[in-house]
Image (cartoon, rainbow, N blue to C red; front, side, top):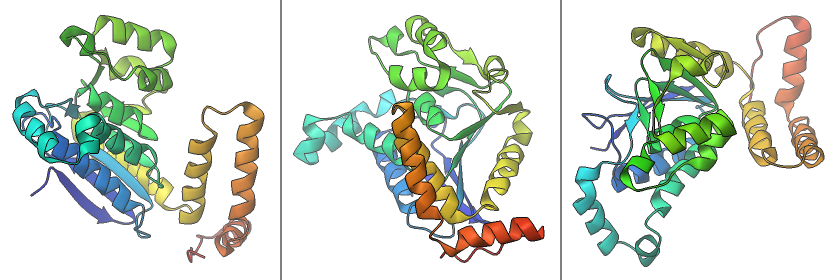
Length: 261
């Protein structure tokens, strides 16, 4: 049995990391995250993903330091590429989440520490439970980490403070900045995530995938180049029948009937 649970209903896949007590990751967990989000890419029934953690102690509490021996054994017995680049498995997991072709709603149920913060930052929309925090404590244990992800999500000044001090940031401070879409009582977290996911799941699945691809590819580009990417994917979308169905449904004030063509 792995560390992730996956449930699909109404075109929404809920991916839950369930590794008690605090959902800390091992190399095996990271590999499972990479495989899970890569597999979702090929499932036409999935239009949106909710990514959350089990329990109420943490979303993801970073790396499991107690699993160092087991992780070392995996490195020693694994392919040379992993041995020479031990951080590659984390990058693959994070890349799989970022490049997941459908929108991902992060439901942050508790502290997101280290890699947990990175995974939260890579979600397209974030909701969080009261009491959750974002925490990069690497500087306290002789490491550096997630500076690029922190700047991307929080902006340079908040990111620098978090990286330099190692002090956690309560999600309540980030809601007014719209970094976190909303902060809700813990018992309402999944309902809040599902509310957002349901709105997205009603959209054209083709349009959703192309919109995310367009935004991911144009991110970081100069303005004009990014706009050309958007135009390219708009032209591509217009060639599908579902684009015509979207316009017809809008004009006729009815629910669309998506055909995936």
